Length: 238
Image (cartoon, rainbow, N blue to C red; front, side, top):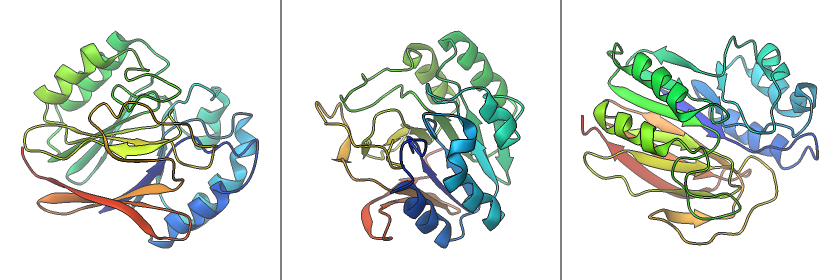
């Protein structure tokens, strides 16, 4: 089982490096493509340089709601909602909407996980609930106070986020959620301020690949050439 993800592509402004990043992400034939929001900064049609590649590869994809994304994207992606749970074997991905209230997202997450039997639990959202300081703050979704307790309650191993155009992750440890920031799909990088507990922070562009095994998730951040710029492993601590 594997997935790739990134956010903040900006294809309505420029095709590159988003086209090359997507091509490289698909080279490894991931099982799932996860979009972390802010796809074109324009109409859904402007995301064609990326999305047509994913459709042609016949790889399933799921997408969260960026602050620059209109609801025309729901039709474009064939999604019914910006909040849902996607189960694939022993993995569940829960999509939250950073443009909605913390209370509504908490309800979505609680309902999705209280009945899920999946071993691996991954949440994804555009605006981060935990991030290095950059153009946007640490709790840009304004939902951390109600979501983080549920991450602990339901033993969520991984949270994927965008919005800040940088990369980084919190160190994987036993009994705590690992947060990833991957607003690296092609838009111009932001500056990095206080790391707020994140490591491997960089202004590099690229995508995160996760390979899910029986006892761990191995993650690699790769650039458009396929070079591995960072890697880490999340153990099964549930």
